[in-house]
Length: 373
Image (cartoon, rainbow, N blue to C red; front, side, top):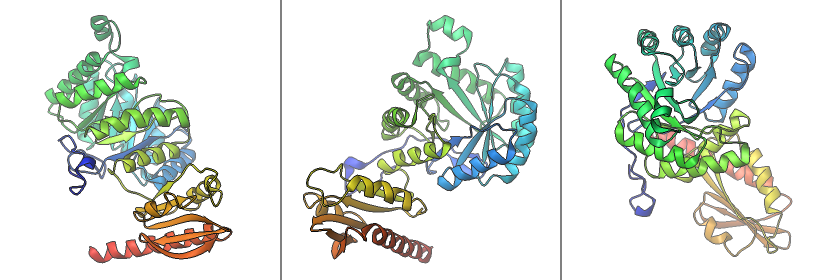
């Protein structure tokens, strides 16, 4: 898919994949790359889990995954599905019965790990339940739980072992005439994940779920995920992503969108372009950006905002953003609208004024988009 013919160095050509449905969300083909997260509440605590799902959806999650470790969770899942604004994926490990129960409870997709779900007979029963209840499946290969025979064959988790694991499970699904599946080959090691994903991308046309598993905390996990997922997405690999962080699921959604936004693959909310600040700054850039990020969280319309501390790069950056502010000294700066210098504003009033200008521009863009439909 070409994103920018005028600037070919920004083009990304996505791998051709089949399209499947996860509830009402298309995954693969020419569909937008879907952003996922996973709840970390006890599934049996329905109200808390639903609240977390709703918060993730409000942040932009297209799909949310919920763990189903026991029969009580299967029962709770039915109510969670009913209350959820987005499709729910049931995370299944160790007991195939949970997969059957989750399909019956209305899950849009079952995430099963071929390394721990059981023998082929049990997998077939899960496939039947998925088919009977119009449920897709994600084959979730993980370097930390590869099948024993593959570890014996290869000696350790490696890209070849992960790809072979995925292809073995694909064969089982296809032998049972089931094709509504996607696949992931995750590892906590960026190099292992990247190599495994490249291998599986060449071996199948199934939609690919990208993720660096157990990536770490908010800062370290964001960096690791941005490196691993960013490079794969840049290569055109990936149809849906989940950023795995030891943090609030809403943060996973935010990071996922920022990765996609940085590559021009998804657009949602305000993209703030800001300088790191220095002695030339005409106002406190770091504090201003931190405040604006919070004040503008409610904006879902794709648009750009530049916040630059001085005139070295400020006017040039403002030329390419919807709204901009450049520090000019003497307690004020220049406001730019649609790339053009518009008017001066005092530093004391600029935050409220910028929020007002961004909201106004978002309303204009929304009205134009609605008129074009």
